Amino acid sequence: MAKEKQATDTAVPADIKKLSFEAALAELEEIVHELETGEGDLDKSIGQYTRGVHLRMHCEAKLKEAEARIEKITIGAGGAVTTEPLDDA
Image 1: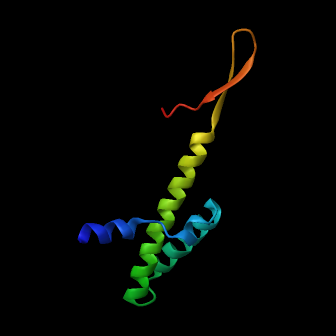
Image 2 (image 1 turned 30 degrees about the vertical axis):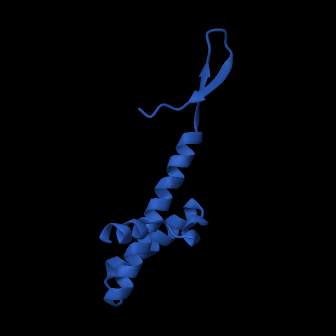
């Protein structure tokens, strides 16, 4: 049962999935700032922390999507310009 709860806790909520990378990052920065100040009650802080984790996961997923779409421009021996997937290295 604990594993089921943990699995649902890590699922990114639908409202966060709709956010752009920039909007999610801005909200995450706001949450971090609020948590760093230590203001607010414990329950609210825990809720914000959980939302922050989901925002971080969403931002990481967006970055991986962008990375997968980036292509490297290469110039062949004959001067032909082509593209190929960007290396992970």
